[in-house]
Length: 158
Figure 1 (cartoon, helix red, strand yellow):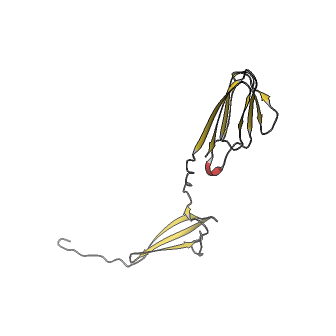
Figure 2: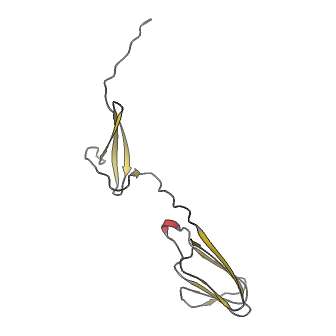
Figure 3: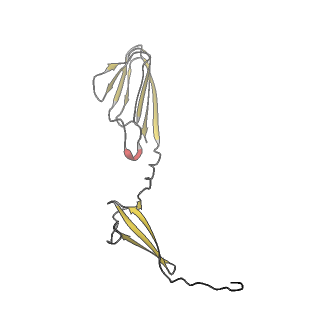
């Protein structure tokens, strides 16, 4: 059709988009309708017909939770030569002892003291702190006698 031009009018119908979202109760359907430049969100159960009122925080169901902020970590190191005690209070994230000489003992959580031979290196630790709140629940008490030489390090959230 040479030399002919024209236009086609489409009927004005709303544009609907759907998304499955989650709240504190479970998943639901949100419909976004755009008509005449205005967008309206309508929440409904997954059946697409029953009205739904979200509870709590609304997120995408596949959304990863926000990572916990990196907590500040305090560290300690103490070398004990000869007689003396090094105590690490409960709540540490890690405790390490390295024995250079002698046979200092370690008592964990008020339990029986166990001797550690020269050359021993032990570490206790948790994987994650922050909001999950992982810590070592026990107190560690290291006791050296004459001739002992050992190093104790620890970390804990500030």
